[in-house]
Image 1 (spheres, one colour):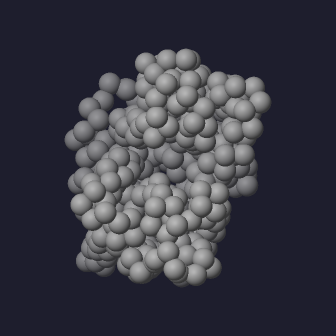
Image 2: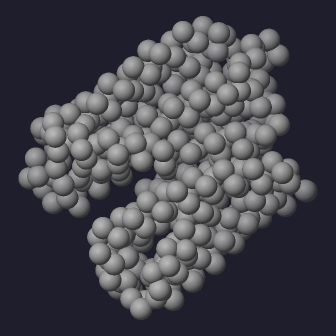
Length: 412
């Protein structure tokens, strides 16, 4: 079992660590996750081209996302230890390099290369949040923490937007492999660009920490703290609902509501904008009322309500109503991440913020892996996407229940 008081662990907030510019820390951490996310999303953004090259249906390229999050879940158990041993910047550079290498592998004209390439991209994705939590906690000191974490979490939709803007035209003009290589090279350039701050920002690393650790010991930091454990369970639920919304919204619009594919794509863009806006709003609100837990409860209520109202959508529903409802759904269901990361940082034992974050992310990624298959299974039984979203209202409510239980632990 890991001892939080073990001095070899290396503190997240040492008194002797240099004070970096908050704006620069926010820029670096946001860019790292945005670029890694971009490389994850590029294959989906050019799925028809990739599928044609491999001679498989476009729908099968979606399995790449599952492989990415499977890889992320595997390496998340070690991510906190890497931050303490190597430092946050070296770990972030490793994330970028793994992302670039995985993207380059996926560019090879073989499905056998795409599979490990996707998993390597997932390894890189696992190493984005723990170092960011370490750095952002160090510069925030608790002031404006929720908003800082929420701004950083906009990196995920921003990375998706970057992939959507860059990859299709590059693929159509120069070939699908070029789009993946552009993403890989961009990540490598940024990894080299942040080398100049490494010595200063990683001054708190502890090179003596062994990497030969039992992953279960780091998971124990989360599991043995009732509040962190409950937040992990809530993150499982929230992430499952989030990914199902972004994954199945277009299909629901086309199959159940008679939208054209182009218009459904426009709604998806609206969802992304609403998600980014939600992350900023909820982060600001959590700092304003000094209660991230209450904000996460509000998000659960909003997500549950909008999922239930989604069951009432029909082909005859006014388009503006559909746009508005799904935007509100995304505002809640996609907006939770930053506040949740800030709450984990607040609850984590001194010196173990990156480790606690990595442990909770293992459970979070499990929700991402489980959510879509469960949604698909429910749809096969129900036969209607709108009603299936209504069933997922229960998942949002359960997530809120875990947050409420954690709140009661706080007051106990």
